[in-house]
Amino acid sequence: MNICVSTRETPAYTALPKFDSHIGAAYTGKGTSPNNHHFSFRRPSSEPSSSEQQTQKTFQSNLAQLSATIGFNPSRVTLPNGPWPHSGQAIIAESESFRWIENPLTGALMPVTSTEDCEPVTYDGIVTKSKQFVLGIQGADCPSIFLYDPEQNVISIAHAGWKPLVRGVVANSIRMMEELGAQSERVVAYVSPGCGDRYNCFHWDEAMESHIKEVFTDARREEFSQDHSLRYVMTDADRRELEGALGREIGDADATTFCLTVLVRRELEQCGVRAENISWSDDSTVVTRYKDQEKGEERQELPPFQYHSYRRERPEHGLSMGVLFLKN
Image 1 (spheres, rainbow, N blue to C red):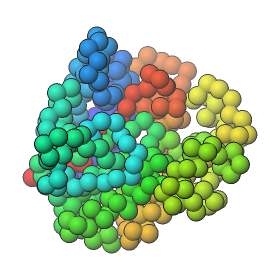
Image 2 (image 1 turned 90 degrees about the vertical axis):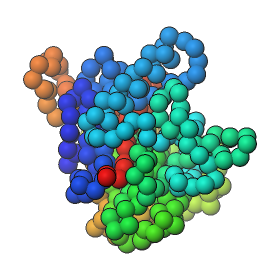
Image 3 (image 1 turned 90 degrees about the horizontal axis):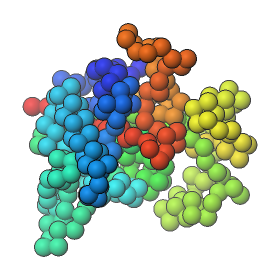
């Protein structure tokens, strides 16, 4: 069950609530107000346009609101220096191979190499045992993975779209945690909502596009592309629900999915994380709606959608934000 700790205008949900005296762990949903762009966390670009200036203002305002709700310093949030690369790479935040500088567009931190060139650093997973960092994550259909070793106070957060998963982001994140003293059998994990194993349309076998097949091949994970336990065939009810959310027909070619939550859980267990220490949300960012309408909300035929979704809203989709940090 997702526990909302704020209003629907600025929705934030707890992750790993059992440990909330030691860590802050939360992710956002889609707000019901257009005044804050539905509580979106799209990062602004450096383009000098009025729309990007508004995106910058919205990001910083929403981050300040989230920080006030959850209790962290927004200037200590870490984000990649560039878009999420989907490389599967994980880094240790306190590594001496790079340093953190302020991103003037977001007010958050971004990494650059420690060399004179100051090259930008990107990643999909990040690990720390330092209280000076607030690990940030973004997504709009990709799940996020929250990891914590309560004995060593090592935390990690990872962007878990299908490409990072195939490219090893789970194993890489666990390995980085172990470098800081964590042990996988002690790690507790939470997987936040993604597109959903019943709705994540994916082309398999002969229908798989060549550039998709290359991802499995290059990562030497061809076994995933042949593993039918990672697939789900939609029922007629699933199709109707997805069609209602997307506003288009779902044909037979799109009726088989890629079960990312199943893959995350399997990858975690193969890394030594105990099954009983893994929890996840069954919500779908594409189809899940608020269960009912709040007092004062304008009455609609259907409640609003609960999460931002790239598939449902592109190209004007919003982005959610997740944070994970050690408390003082």
